[in-house]
Length: 124
Figure (cartoon, rainbow, N blue to C red):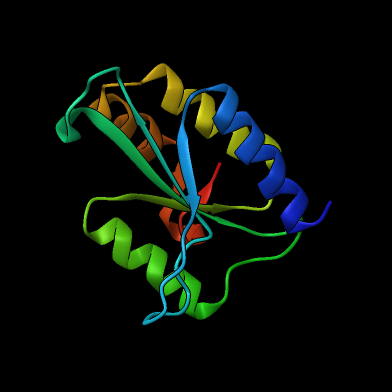
């Protein structure tokens, strides 16, 4: 499966789960994660939305040094930022976002338990 195939399937799942997603690019900064996902409760304010940055790789590939640095920077600012080379892991994270809709602290606790800082913030 190619990276774009994983991304297309995750975007479709996000739509089914009512999770807002956009391709994340920055003209001034290379290495930013591929996707940003935002999930909030109906009529939720920004304090109750869950935001997640995800770098996607084809199976067996890993992030570049610049991408690893960007994930570390985002995580250091308290953001949920990770990478995966698996549709299943990405889909599980999106389902958990939906489950914790309106509860960013709950998602953050789940996220902390399911990422590996020693593996450059890989979903596990």
